[in-house]
Structures are given as structure tokens and as C-alpha cells.
Image 1 (tube, rainbow, N blue to C red):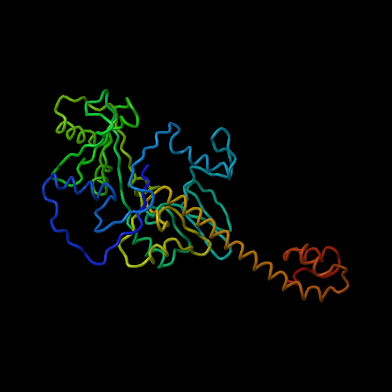
Image 2: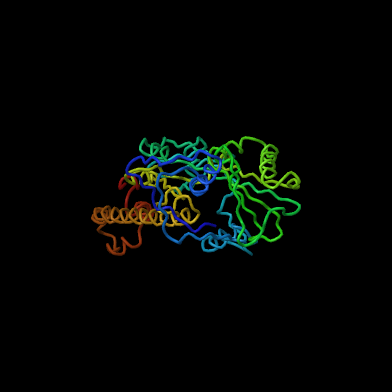
Length: 371
């Protein structure tokens, strides 16, 4: 896991590099300096917080154990597993109907869920796709902001071999392949330092190459990768026994790896993307001002969005309480024979319960006469 954060991409004007990379070696080095770190070429980038060190988390429980641990505070769990029927999995949201009165969510299997508010945490790529329809459609300022955010594709391909044939030591973990085509199986890494005896190599592709590889079969990708490895290590190396090719771009629930904001002079795009539309609130790594593109950016933005929603709910509750007190004044004037004091009435009667309770006790006529 990388402990980095992209604070901003600054550019006062378009800066032409003194010398563009031309040779395969220059292209490979330039790919490592730019594409590998950011998935696309950036004119100027600054990184802050948490330093430059690289870390690999080798916990055998996998990444999901972090989610289960955090879920213990909100959901029913047992032995690290979530057993709460309030959490609905494998439900594909296709339509969101929203109005001033609430939100209705329809899923692909025909289920319907009603709520006062909704927090939407799908990726920026999904928001740009047609997976979810909004009724009524999102306003123009919202869709324009969503469309202006770039979606990066970052692909780590894993290949497993019967034995290792590459140099291994704590000081030797990466090797680079120079090719006339930029980003063509350029950056390789062995996993022996993190997982001794795994005999696994990882090659990283980005953006254009990622999309190209995702569109072809695993067999074609394996053939290309083996040709590159034999070009580096000779013709006698063994064939890979297995390959894993993630497909973040073609996955309709992801549509990319992470967000990347365009170089702009202000934060208006980010502000518009994270701003709620009525009773729909938006969150995710793409709404994080300082940590977009990172898992902890999604986590922290989720906390911020939840706090914002709670504040709105508190304000709404306060307005309802004020309305109840205001409506209760003329009601008490009409029911002067009641022994109930104003303080007791305000504390014990809900706005919607007042007519019903008085009607049932025979003090007043039909409830509609009061409402």
C-alpha cells in the first residue's frame, strides 16, 4: 500500500519539457517517473503527507479484514463476518427517484427501497456511465462537474511460475523493459521480498495499455508478457502456470481505477462533485480534496459526508420542532377547557398526533378541521 497523497496538480501555463523522450530507454524512464506513479503524464505534481516510502501489507486475511473491523461499530458481526440483514449485498442499483419528500431506490432485481436521504458512494466512472438513472435527472452543474473529472486505469498483472528465474535480493525488486511503444510491459516487480517462495511477477500497465489489454483474452496477454520476459531473460525460461488480469475499466461497477482531477485554477469542480443534490449525498475517493485516488481518501470522505448529512438532519429536526410549537399556540387557544399545560403539550404531543389524540378523546371535531 502506498502511503502518499497527491495534494494538487499545479500549472500556471503549459510547460514544454526541454527534451521529449524518444528512445526506448528514455520512454521507459519517463514512464516510471510519470505514468507509473500517476497513470498519466502530469506537467507538474506535488506530493505531501506521509513521506515517500513504499509499504506492502502481507496480511493473509486480505484487505477485506479492514472493512470487517470497521463494520463492527455499525453492523452485527460474528468471527469477523458481517451477519446483519440491514446490509444488502449483490443488489445492483439502476434507478434513483428523488424529491423533496424522500428518495426511492430501485435495483436490477426489482427490489425497491425508500429512504429520507441517500449517500451515493459509487465511483466517478460509474457516475459517468449509464448504470444508474436519476429521476429527475441530475442538474446540469452536477453532470458537467462529473464529466470533467478524469478516470485513470491502473492494471497490475500477476504471473505465477514453477520457479523463479530472475535475480532476487532485498536490493533487487524491480526491473524495467525498454520498448519503442510507451508503457508496453515496462515496469516489473517480483514478490519474493513480500511473499518468499511465491514465484510471482507483477507487471504494471496504465491507461491506454490497460484498456487495450482488458479488451483482449488472458491468453493473448500471457503470450505478450512471455515474449517480453524471454526478451529480457532469454528463451529458456519456463512458461507461467497462471495469470491474473484485473479489469477495472470493463467492470461496470468500477469503470476505472481512481479519479484524477484536471488542472484547474480553483476547486469548483471538486466542490460541485461532492455537493448534494436535494436528498442525495455523494461520497467516495473522488470527493476527497486531499486524498483522491486513494483508499483512505474514500474512507475519510465517507466520514465527512456522514457528518454533513447528520448536520442537515439535525437542522431539519430543529425546523420541525419550531413548526410544532408555532402550530400548537392556536390549537391551545381552541382547547381552553383542556387541563394540559403548554409545556406538557409541547413535550408529549407530536404535530401529527395532536388532532388524532384530541379527536379520540372527544374534545374536538374531525382532525381535518384543525390540519
